[in-house]
Length: 282
Ligand code: HEM
Image (cartoon, rainbow, N blue to C red; front, side, top):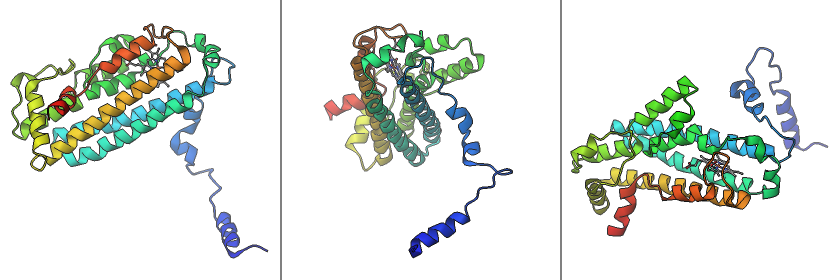
């Protein structure tokens, strides 16, 4: 005999929509035909599916990070800091997701990866243009990705524009100046297509914020959100480097770099140098 709850569930099922000849389904809405047919394996090796899916998932999260970062940049430019905090906090949560893909990928052993690595040719995450767009949005401006995508005029132009646009850090420094904190003119009028270098007036301004938290509460909150993002970006880089070492040791990368040696070097890169320096001096 059916219980009352089971009976209710059965009745509910009868009212489920199943006629979709004229209506949009879940998979239509999400474009799942394109998404789920994009895992095109180049070998017969079982683990290549893992390798591709982990990259796809990472690129999707990067897409959302860019969406949030670019919107947060506009918020800060228009002194809408509160609205930017929500987006920056979301970026940090997405970065947590990005970091955990390494746990899944590490289940692949060196022997398994070696069975299909040669199929990749010179393709490498080094050429991930979304990763470079995130770096541009955070303020680390390098040019090689522009060269790599010269063959795609639209993408090349988008990359060029992002390369020349003010970063999250540039607009944050402008916000410090608008709050009345003295910032050197050459920092405020600098060429934003070049990576920002640590500057004394910027450090002093952040110091003021950290020493007068109540007076500058929003800028203080902004500084901590930026620090979260940089911290998590470095954690992602570290986990990438260690996963790569675990899987290919010190072999050269498919992108042509020195592999782990190169990945260790980029760990020294800072997006928001003054925010880290001030911690020693406070
Ligand atoms: C078995 C897995 C992986 C290996 C062995 C690997 C290896 C490497 C190596 C050696 C580099 C340095 C450039 C080169 O010479 O190729 C690199 C760069 C990079 N990889 Fe991976 N990678 C793996 C997985 C991933 C995944 C899942 C992502 C996520 C999108 C990723 C994203 C990147 C990015 C963004 C760079 C550029 C880093 C920079 O220039 O700062 N990699 N990878």
